Length: 216
Image (cartoon, rainbow, N blue to C red; front, side, top):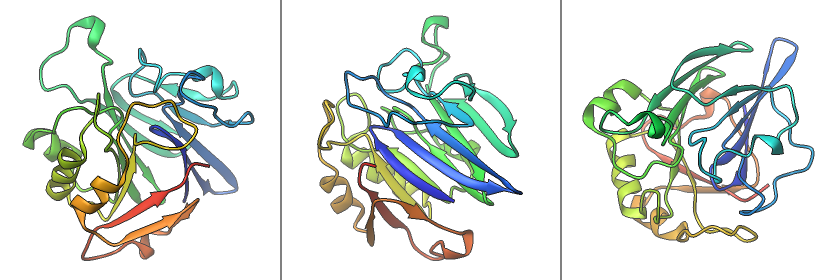
């Protein structure tokens, strides 16, 4: 599996299943926020907040992708995907898609993408998510989790890898704080790279690492 970070909460996740390369793109964002690659394409696109410009720019991805914006269970191109609402209360119909947490199983690794999460998860929600190998979590504050709240959630979830997202980056018009306070709060070993390639056997066994991705 290879993961690239395109900024905000947009990732490109690629793997090979049989002879086919399968690509997932999460939360493509508006041109008002920044520029995504012109040749961006995917087999699967997830949008965690379909009414928000940080997450819903489907036009930025080449046509032909299977688009998921609703909670539910899916399997696309051999990849199981599960979406669950992040709200604590039953939402009004117009707010039903306020934020959806998506989980993917890729190369036998469980990835949880928390989208634009702005409140801590309940114990019941954590139980529903189960064990997570790779956690993609917003950390920049404002309309998403603060650095402290994100670090507290990492402590409760105990993933093997944490990839921070939705934080201040060059060339992005995003009202968010820097990533460094979150890294300091977690206090874990940090790997900095522009593209992360991993097999399940390479994941840390007894501790949590932070993978800090630069913008692709």
